[in-house]
Structures are given as structure tokens and as C-alpha cells.
Image (cartoon, rainbow, N blue to C red; front, side):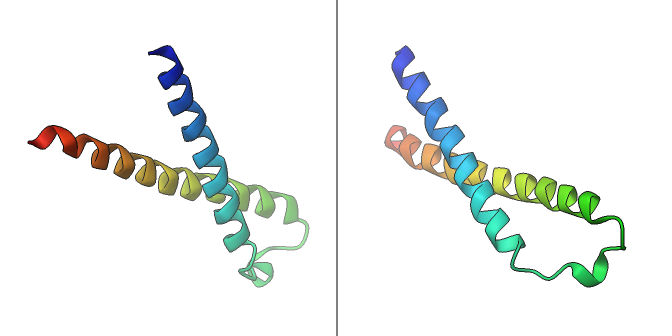
Length: 77
């Protein structure tokens, strides 16, 4: 029983990291240079990191929920 909880936790952590990485890669393709004030590059990078974490985590949570819901469909009948 406890091993399945650990496996679920590991899959969740890896999923979050994967989707945060994918989101980071997508966001970095956008040119934000015209929007960033001179001398505020560090703050802009930090904001982009936070946005990537927020979006990546939500996308990961959606996929993990969807997988769980599809497994729960067995209990429908």
C-alpha cells in the first residue's frame, strides 16, 4: 500500500518538473526584450520563472487528474 503512494508521489513530482521544463522552453521562445526596462532583467527573469512554474504545474495537475479520472471510470459499472 505504501509503495503505491510513493510511486504516485514520484510520478506527480516528475510530471510537474517535466511540464515546468516544457513551459519554460516555450516561454523562452517569446521575445520579451521590448517589454523589459533596462536594469530590471533579473526581475523579469524571475517573473518568467514564476510564470513557467504556475503554468507548468497547472498543466501537470490537469494531466494527472485526467489519468486518475480515467482509472476511476472502472467503478462506474
